[in-house]
Length: 136
Image (cartoon, rainbow, N blue to C red; front, side, top):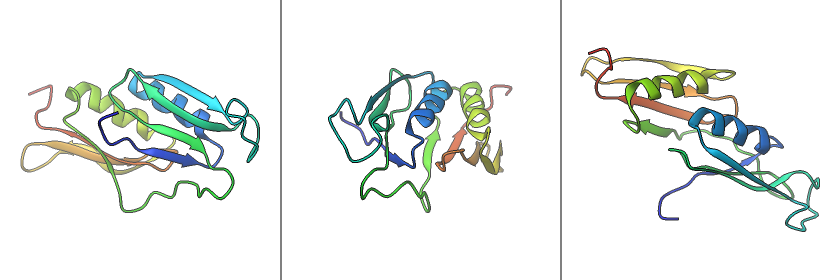
């Protein structure tokens, strides 16, 4: 691995969160349970390690077990500025908004670029934007 990759410790929702992100970003989801890793510090079917592959976004996630603290996301955003064509970025914004909260609608700014912010249903804060609109 050669790039920064967020690793989320989720409150028992790692499997569903990874499935959600895999669907949003068109990535393959891989999960391994505590039982598979011979761990006994939580429910056997809890996720010990999971990740996305083959898509434009890389994430790792597990269920918080033992003394792990579950994700509490404040003061940080995951930026997807210019990482795909405008239509794809609009679709990601829409999908991440489902069950989440739009902080700032995806819109054109006075300087010509478009961006917006959303906190998804799992608590991740995303900044999504692009330089030129596909309708321009």
